[in-house]
Amino acid sequence: MKKLLVVLLTVFCVFSLVGCGGSSNDEGTADAGDGTVTIKLGGSGPLTGDTAVYGKAVENAAKLAVKEINESDSKIKFDFKFEDDEADTEKAITAYSSLYDWGMQLSLFTVTSGSGANVAALYDEDKIFALTPSGSSTALAYTDTTNYKGNFQMCFTDPNQGVASADYMKTKFADKKIAVIYKNDDVYSAGVYEKFDAQSKANGLNVVYVGSFTADTSTDFSSQLQGAKDAGADLVYLPIYYQPASIILKQASDKDYAPIFFGIDGMDGILTLENFDTSLAEGVYLLTPFAADATDDATVHFVTAFEAEYNEEPNQFAADAYDCVYAIKQALENIGVDNIDADNLYEPMVAQFNSMTFNGITGTNVTWAENGEVSKAPKAVVITNGVYVSAD
Image (cartoon, rainbow, N blue to C red; front, top):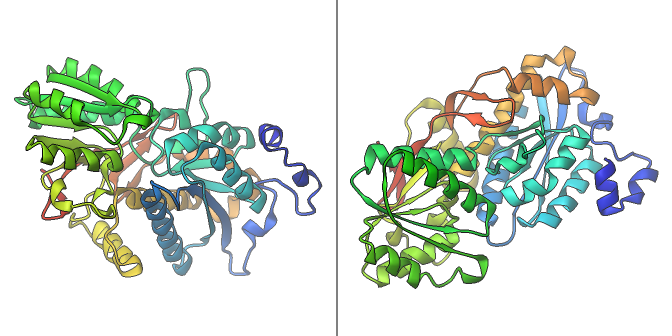
């Protein structure tokens, strides 16, 4: 934990009687006398602030999965702790430090990409296996010079979302004139757009307008919408989060501009945004790995259990988090309770995720590359009568 000590000056940890090691706390693997092993599972995300809908969805779904597993006959059990990092890069370091001191042995990493990119090296240095449900930037898993081999993703990476969006449009909207509005100072949005731009050209899509904005210009989209309208765009691609998307939908309506709007996973949550007129989102497409109206047994069980527990329909972030916990459980069971060494979970977990296949509610036959990227098929949903329904 060299880097963390330097960054945070956590001198207390050096002298703490319980120690500062994330994998040295034996309480995390206490044998209850029945052959079970309990693992300390941590994670952080925004539980307050503008993106709290994402963090709460992840925390709630993870709690649900932990509850189900702990009440099952599995020999793997979890002690779960989730910290509020407010989607702030510096607070993500504080959250990581708290989880490390608690004795975190495995992690759901972070919910947002910015936070995850800021602590990715810490997970790597401290050899704590981490599986993020929703941090889509490749910076969580690798950089141009480094592969964080224990950092994995359950969600599509930003490049994959951009490519998948262009491929879907080629199949479904090849005849449309397409406009793009993205946030150029956000690693998430810019990363998706970069790959979409390349793939849209390769696919021969007719992109007639590209507009961008920054954090300082995220309340007035009149010029971008007018540019798209003047260019004759009948589909507007929004690789952005739902807050600015909600403003764009409102301002487009005020302009009597009604193209097809097409978003990605960051759009998920727009229907629960406070004071948002959900009728404005009618007909919006989202590319996502999860559709709450799917009729397979696993999805029906998850949606029913989540709604019973939290009185709301789960979004994609919740679904990915639920899958994260069950994928971690599968890997631990593959290792075998008798073979689990709580002080050395890193290498065995990496080996499992580099080789196993997982079937979950956000995808079947899910696998991971050695760089931590997930491979699974995306799904398209469209908002109809205020709910997500399959677009295909």
